[in-house]
Length: 168
Image 1 (cartoon, rainbow, N blue to C red):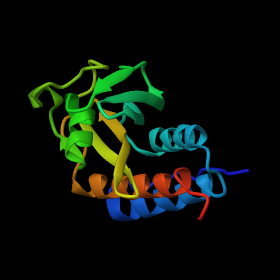
Image 2 (tube, rainbow, N blue to C red):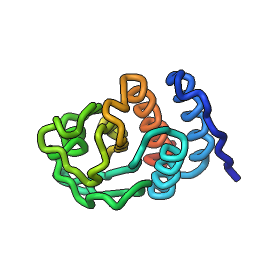
Image 3 (cartoon, rainbow, N blue to C red):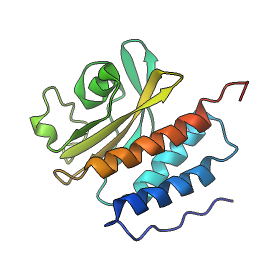
Image 4 (cartoon, rainbow, N blue to C red):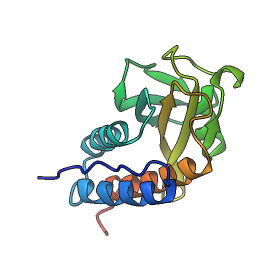
């Protein structure tokens, strides 16, 4: 059975994300089910990362809509149009987006009024965007370039485990 280990060094973000990614690889090893992996990944992120009030997934279910996946936090918006809000914009532009102040982001979708900053990272496989990892914090400017790079690594580990083809 997998057992998480507390990562105490939150001030050294590269070391923190190395440790977090190591735990995620162990957690997802041998499991290919998308929902199980998303549930465990969101739980690990919420458990290990300080100052989060939401951590989870939205999956692209059609060319123009994201649908809520497993998450940790308060109930959330179920459907987000591609191009709307931070999640929809990240999908439309196929890039990570860090928002220091969600109130200053045009078209921000407020699922939790306590959220003040947000980091959204696309899930990519075979050159296609398949969804996003979405992190919210009640702390303004909670996320920086180290967080973005770290969660991009998390997204790559998740995608490699969850979107395997028969040839792999």
